Image (cartoon, rainbow, N blue to C red; front, side, top):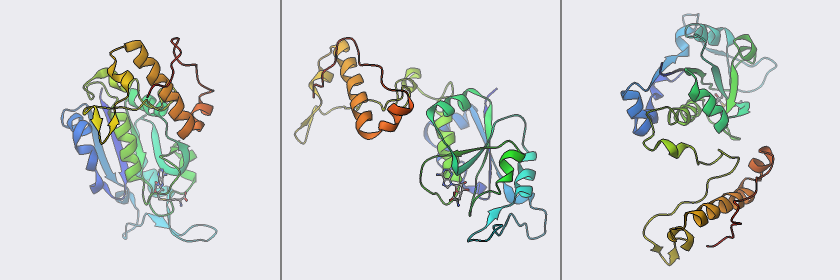
Length: 240
Ligand code: SAH
């Protein structure tokens, strides 16, 4: 059974968008996964096809009605996890992405305006997920980010099967930095250790750089992961 994504949106024309190219697009064409974008507006009950209304308690903007959202969800619900893109959700992590990619797909609600009537989350067991601490104009780009992250993990998508395993976040660390030819570029060299052919030294250097860069840029990752297991036995020194 392949991974099936259903996106509920006011802008179905935005899909597949970037998911139709490169790895994800090839997977889509080959049936490794499927994508259906459905218009929430098709589930509006009145002749004006209204999907939103003013916020209870006052304030700017419009809120997506839970009765319309529920009708859109009920038309597709089949046991797949139901997610909603929301800056008020838990931050999406690679761990959650892995869980989702191991399942049979997801139903993803995309918000617009001020977002969703809060009752939809409990009322339909919808999990809110955020893609970061900033505000997008709609959930569609977030849904694309989520699906892109899931789809690249599906069997048959990535060429080198192992390249998914050593990446940023997998051990609570950022990945080590990469280099490729030319060896010298504008006076900057590829670190000598990477040209040494000494696999143990290279592994130790990479681990060390992953730890250092994470401490510098993303100390929150190390904290969340409960600290760092110390670098490799050969006691890597920084050598660049
Ligand atoms: N008033 C809301 C923001 C609404 S933005 C608030 O302050 O929390 C409109 C829609 O864009 C949201 O319903 C959501 O679907 C999407 N969106 C915006 N930022 C997002 C983020 N960081 N992660 C996921 N979805 C986001």
